[in-house]
Length: 107
Length: 107
DNA sequence: CCGGAGTATGTCACATTTGACATCGTTTGG
DNA sequence: CCAAACGATGTCAAATGTGACATACTCCGG
Image (tube, rainbow over all chains, first blue to last red; front, side, top):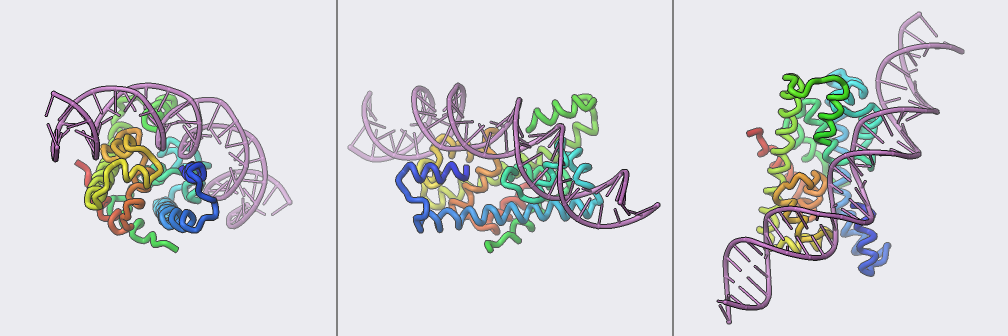
């Protein structure tokens, strides 16, 4: 859903470097990325605060250490769904999460 | 990633009805669902406030009317990613989103 | 130095999500 | 009554995300 959109726009006849496209997309995309980064930081922070290893959290999530590493790195292969589930699993409250999101201002 | 986890846990030797598993999972799952519902409500609310039709929003999202309908219905086939992207596309600020999430208390 | 614990990164088969389309229901204005 | 506009629901091929595994890097205590 990232390069997809680009592909779609290109098919619709918009050049890749087109200013409108570029700015338009990234304004939103950037916020989205900022948000993921903020949540990822939250996961790491809470996990460490709980004294858990990535492997331990992975077990709780029914996942693997490598994926937890990617989660905390906000890897492009990690969905918001997984980030949220991770936060909830560690015990973050909706309030905690809201706070993380509010802290996600665009660069 | 829902029945998947169950399958995984079973393979790991945990009974389906196991109390810990059961409570542990659903407490979290429930919150997750509540959150999706809250965000879905937010999408519909903002869209209507902007006087947009589902088709119009779909165009902005590079998606289709049917998917927007599913988004607002918090259909199981809709990811948090898509919900968030929708909110950002309509113009929701991180603050707006944080508010929606805080409003997502477990039933 | 070594070894182990914890974390990072690439890859892949398999699972889920997605846009698109078809189709249906409901409302509204003529 | 009809037609147009809007929204809901099911289906599917293609796109994307996922757990698992292998492997590498970094610390740290011995």
